[in-house]
Image 1 (cartoon, rainbow, N blue to C red):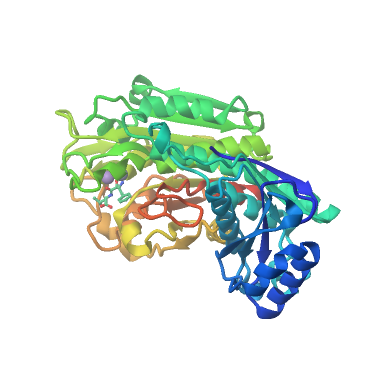
Image 2 (cartoon, protein in one colour):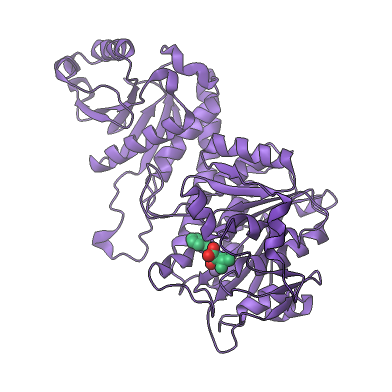
Length: 503
Ligand code: BES
Ligand code: MN
Ligand code: ZN
């Protein structure tokens, strides 16, 4: 169960929840100050606080049973060194609080704002909206579990129904509440993206993805789905070539938000929607292949982001394009050596059928030109090389517009969905040279994430473009504080935060 999220005016003595989380910093003087404050409010806590070794270290928690609160518990949550506090540490601490409340089988949790008398950390900029949002994000996102296929006894099992972020001051409360409202929207969307990418490939295939996209974005977003006939008519050669190996027909999903603003150039988001990537004839090894159910994580991120921007009523014209296929090895599958004619007339030689993402993105990026966009951002689980190069902690970023990339970098720091720019030096381009077509779909092993971006570059029009390779960040084999194992939903918070202050 995902808890309901609210905000409330109050303090540690007014909360009525079963558990009240109270942040403490690691520094000795502040810790002593906090303990003193606590014993003033709850004299019965003195014995425990005198005896405890609890030092306020990051992610440490201590449950206090205080007489004055009846059956309600106080949960001390460490924030680490006060001058080192960041929004990300608040997310993680809130996640630790929610997890502790969950293991205490509580149904409600209050999270008290961090103490404003501890001044060091206010270097964070007193941005209470972001602080409220970070606390809410960490708490909510940590409660996610993909449990729809588990029988009852193995389900999430969480009893936590309600989380409330608490502030004692009118002005701070107002800002925290705005942050909480924002968090509710982006967390819902992040979990939608996680659900899509965690869903098994017998549930999510191109047609079912397109239907889900329609439901997810809601009435405020116009959804159009191109079927195979329309895709043939448009001559999207890359989408058709990859789809040939599967009995599931391809789809091309077009979502448009603020269509009434269609005279203003849109931001176009493009998401790779390979609902399963077996590699095609250049088949992948069996071990770990099931992870390729999440090869549509880029599509999931842009679809979910459209839901969020519509709920937030962002004043931008935004379009999302999702080419969707299965990459299998049927009798009609594309073969190494095939030459594809793409939507913009350029040809590509299929050197490796496992480099399918760029083939479908080529058509989508060409199609994007029709909107005369002010900016195009594609999001794709594009290369194993991005995983090798950056691991699971950074999304690879390339493109042709430094200003947009700088802004994405900042959004990445704020949301902690960090991106790292890779170079697009001219010299890399020749690695994609083909003797028989305009470009080859594989540039060999060196700099695989970069040569993939150079392939895409062949198909972009006269527009600003950023490519995000989320191969490493979209799916985790080990849980982080508020990202469980499996699909992370990466890209949603990043894109929405970015779009909020673009241009
Ligand atoms: N979907 C994969 C990339 C991928 C790998 C995503 C691991 C997530 C985790 C992509 O379609 C692919 O197979 N890329 C090939 C390209 C190569 C054949 C040029 C790769 O990276 O190995
Ligand atoms: Mn592949
Ligand atoms: Zn793929």
